Image (tube, one colour):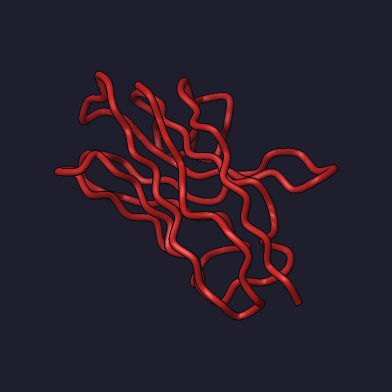
Length: 125
C-alpha cells in the first residue's frame, strides 16, 4: 500500500483546511486508515482514524468536534476536514494504514504498517 498526503498549508487561526491521502496498492476492506501529526520537539500523536469497511471513526479528544475524517472508497482517498484551526494544531500531518486493527488499537501508531509522507499544516495566531 502506498499513501500520498496533500493539502497542507498556512492558515489563520479559526480557518479551515482539508487534507487528502490517496492510496494505491493492495488495500482491503479490513484496513483502518488514519491521521497522525508531529509538532516540532514533540512526539507523534494520533488525530483520527476510520475503518475502511463500515466507516466507524475514532478521534483524539483535542480535535473532536473540529476535525472530521472521511473516505471516498471509489477514489481510494482518505480526507481530514479541519475546522476552527488553532495554533496548537501546527504540525506535520501523516496518513497511515493498518490491517485488521481493533477499535482500541486505532490510536496506536505502532499498529499501522504503511505511512505516507507528511504534509505541513501551519496555523498562525
